Length: 321
Image (cartoon, rainbow, N blue to C red; front, side, top):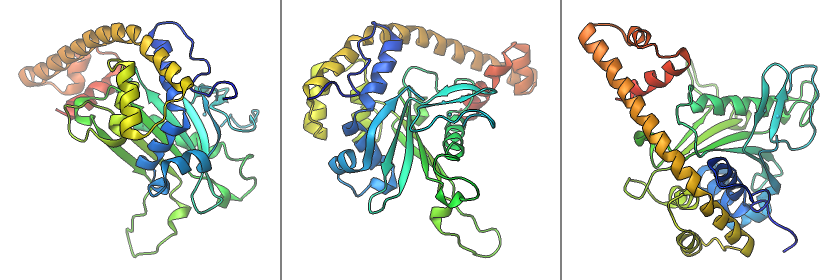
């Protein structure tokens, strides 16, 4: 094999959670893995063979943590495939993995980004779905000057934002959810061709564990691949025997690197467990104030001096209880 695949590039990092997060992204950027995600989650590829997706439809080499998410008007447009969009006013937003793919049976191309929330809180102070929508909007707007100019909006390409969440709340475990634009007839039934509005989709893959329902297919594959508890030998056996993913020497080496990095992740998991306990304690305090003092949820959070940036997280959690 000529050189190293993207799964190998830049993975020789220190034994900490940041290195593990980078390793996860590198492993996921391997075409054999991307192809199975696409077949399971994207309707354009559901009837395709995974090997065809990897070889025929994924274009070039997926880029990992390299791109800005359309520059401000008057700024410089970076040509080609980027994983980051720079904006003077909004700062720099970096995509985890970004690549293009050909739609089977056509010459049409779509852009996909895969975001790996491996270690981050599922509630980082805002709903992840809104971030996914923002990424899709930036991907569409950044096509101006690249895919089309002037009024030629018919040339806009469809975009996907796929989120792989390793530590979702229990109610989201082992689920795959899609969010997209749909036509809704309020008066009459004037139909528009689907291709003219089905231009962005956000897909949330929330991993769980073998004890939950729906632990199968791509959810199980990703859980096994990204787990910091599963041994290297067990990963190799399951991926080869159950998913027909042939582990090259390079891929075996890099999965080994990912396993070796898991120590820091487990240590961080202890800290996250403590943070989760604190969150549960605050939730209990909010509910007690609402019940016993007759105040609103907003008033209870003010009494508890919960920072404004964190209040939406608790509102979302309370709605699920």
